[in-house]
Image (cartoon, rainbow, N blue to C red; front, side, top):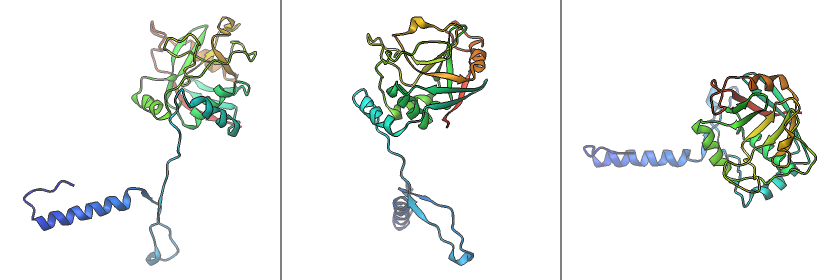
Length: 238
């Protein structure tokens, strides 16, 4: 606390000590609601330490080991994506375990909420999981910086409705995947020429009409929709 020089020294010291005491008692606690036990004179304010969930900062060095353990403890494989155009439901493939675990993990961290389908190519694909919002960049920083190796030999193809993961924007000969983004094949007949280059890790089970509606929005020359198409919420379902 900044004390004005014109104040008496004793007053300044007193205020400083009070301020220090307040900081010490509130630094690691949050007030819980007042508990009533039928007597106003017995009301108490209960304080307890509230710890944030601990998540490792993921890197190329630890991500694969983390997801190897994570996928064993988190077997969810059904996802609901709520967009401005309706709901898309997705089935994640158990065989592509690292990519499934990554998507489940990001969903539980609420990463996708508020991101956008930022690339739309009519009769081909809609691509989501990114945004020009600074808050989304901050979320990525808290999760980590890592890439996923391709897993393309499971027999899955880029059929219509396939959910796949794009390569990183950096040049890499091994098609390492950008874990924060995904794309959905919208083209009738699919895009099998993408097989072998990108990892298909799921498919749309409901809501292809929503995918079609998004694929038909007007875009600029860079395939960015002229009106933002938001992913309002991504959640796991039974």
